[in-house]
Length: 286
Image (cartoon, rainbow, N blue to C red; front, side):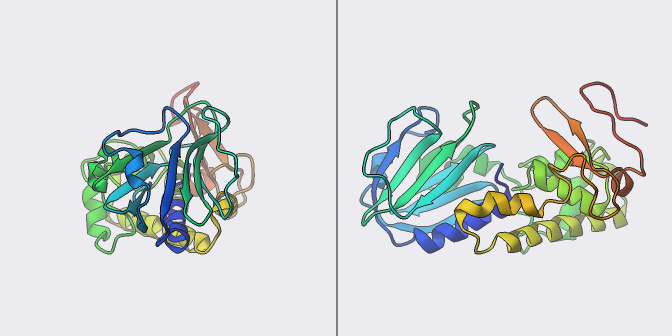
């Protein structure tokens, strides 16, 4: 799933390649992708593209007086093409969900692999009209997101810290992968209760949030859209690396599986050497 660093890199890419170009056609190719109907997609045609903004994991492209907003969900992606195929795409065939063709040639496709169709596209007069954006918490890389603001979010939270970091209404833009990376950097168990952090632990976790995301954004800066997935994977220390050695201590990275996802962690770095039980089978080992 694209998270804050990858979506930020896509925003930069679109600002460089799309801004100033005129939209010729917008072709919806998957019934499930379009979440709004007024204004229609056709209202974007003939209009110039402006700046692209990021709201958490949402991209909002200004086109004329409207905004084309997308959330790539778990398996979605944006594919830029300098030259689009001459033959129009066939609806319902393959991963292609929506195509934006530009005057003078080229454009981009929104694609989604797999059978769980969650990629979403909205045409709105303002990004705040998208319910998912209206519910977002603060951006963790925003200038005003300081240590005290972060501490206030954790205060009274009885949930496990892994879930809190992934909750978009608490903090915008962090998903499964970077929450694993942040907790590894902070040397914190993913199941530690958010409200149980002392002042020093809050500071350490805050620094891990900002540092991990900033490093990922810097790695992704200037990377072509088609290479961002590989860049993300190459920079991850524990997420997706079950069974591999921890790059910090050498212990074996372990995994906990859930119904539709999994987390990875290092027992030595994060849980005092104790492995966490797979929650499909038993409770957390005490």
